[in-house]
Length: 124
Image (cartoon, rainbow, N blue to C red; front, top):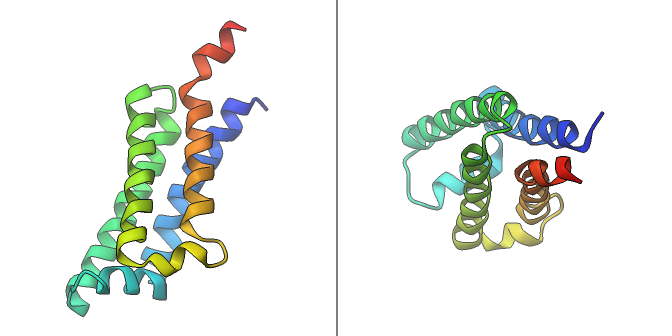
């Protein structure tokens, strides 16, 4: 399996997993903490979290299908940077926890750069 395909599967899997399990199947306490830190009510927090989960699943599918599209991969990188910055502003203590957004998002950005540079790799 090529590095491109591994990156494709891992980036897609991460979006799918983070959309399905901590948001759709069961709302994780950290998800409640994040939406609560912007002052949302319990009902609105639930709706926002479930909507984010659906969005992440859709985005995971889009990346899986359109991984050759540079605009999609750039959007992925910007989304990961934005989500990391949101955590840094809303719940900075999470940045030093085990399995934190720093390690997850930076790794995902690195895999996205592999997808973004696939044309350069093919020319070598």
